[in-house]
Length: 369
Image (cartoon, rainbow, N blue to C red):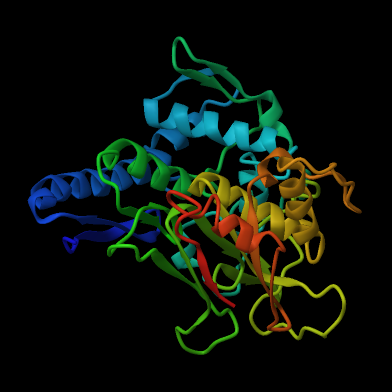
């Protein structure tokens, strides 16, 4: 059997490390290198067009034109359309219109400038009262003219979906002709195939409680997406209190999550430190991980398990926090709690041997738990 040659490109975009890996036959190397270069150019384009920290980006200009029709680039239009669909699929648990609330909490500049520091209010937006989200429902899309109109007062932050979406497009658009590919955008992954014959891709989930780079768990799979969300790194201080970027659309305030330095008692419902979602696409994984954080433990596990059972024909279950949402179908979860405990949804192994396995069921997904 012919050994694969691994073609790789790495860089930085969207305030994150990004990469592409293609495992190809020797005669495909030149073609793979061209595709990998296109993927890196794509990541850079997403960064340039969708960054809220670039005053001239398409997204910034859209935000400035709230209340008016804005002629959008294809990239911006597609990303906003996908973000609205995610909001619909989660019943508003994912909300791309929380930028005013983020800025009010102090996240009004690149994170590197505020990371782990006391944030002193120095702009009018910092100090504004927090309010629930929901303005995404008023966004209008004109597909024929590629126009977007935000309701007055709405401003978008696509940071909660753009990286996963970028990884999906990289795989589907630029790597369609390659059987073995992995796109990584800041830890949001989309992959298929095998880096070596009959050896699935192996992905480590970091231990948020570790002092080194050791992984808490390693997942091996050959198809689908993976994303991890939490506030382990992205936090800052306001009046000595830890504030983070993951907001609850129902209140506009930061979710209740474990953050470094927090004392976490061992209870039946400890806080989540990180949520890792495995789904068919990286976009869905990024959204599902955030929904899991909002659900909390153990409701997040019960919700995706109920959705999985409904998908395979069992009766839909009602949950304490309400029924599952569309974005929780075909999702498996790995949670690391503030106590240090690692838990996972009951459908993780069935997921890995179906959605997570290229050509299922002839090669089983593997998970070292």
